[in-house]
Image (cartoon, rainbow over all chains, first blue to last red; front, side, top):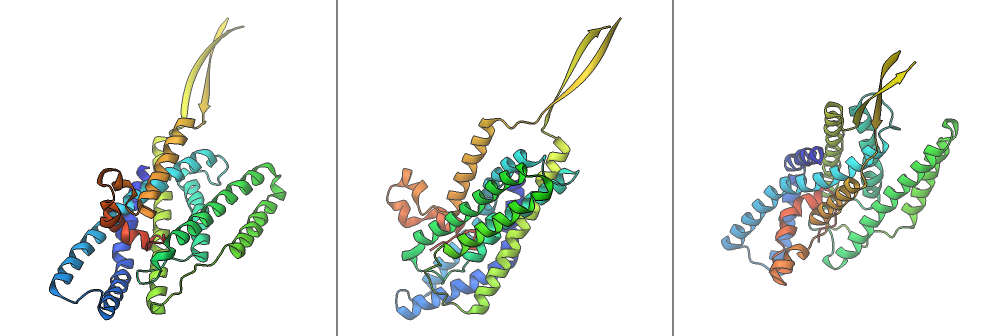
Length: 236
Length: 71
């Protein structure tokens, strides 16, 4: 959790540095659309209120990163504690980085490829619940699928373990094709959307690398595996 | 003749209560950042929370940047 908190804070700061310009641009387009439709007037009062809540949102990003990081760090801690013996490497940082790479791929990158992140201005509010269910479902399908094939991986002889990897590939490809598409059209400029998505992937990847390094370093230093020294006496 | 022997036992099991606690923290944090639309504050604020959306606004930028559908 502590590792996740720090990694999440790094994630929030990375977002401020590289994703925020795209968010500002997208919200600027949203505002222009509001003015054009007559829903809002481009007044000083609007600008004051806008600046006020944008400060709240930007500042909140670091706090939200810490909260999200703590929660994902909790999940990462569970999975690392249960799987660390089978992870390759003789150092806990290496083991944690291998695991963070696997989790980045299965519960972030694959769902992202199916349902990529979108900036403000993209997305119909009427479909937000459906999109949230689809995204979470695909994360769960990919994550639990990976756990299931990991169980198979453990039970197979080393020479046959490739079967489990291929099995996961077939399973997730089928899920990818069968899951419904995002129902919303992307109406924002493609340069903006692509730039936002690229920087979003970089920032999330920074999180996963950070959480792997930090948790691995903590585990290496404090070694929570309990060691009980037992003395026995025998007579010969 | 007696001989003293030392045996080191390494316990590597993860307590079930720790797993449950961490899983609860994971679900709660994910809900706060990814999905709350006023639900948590509505416990105290009532229906107003669904209009004010304090948590939604606080997590707005991270929600977009982390890939969650926001609005």
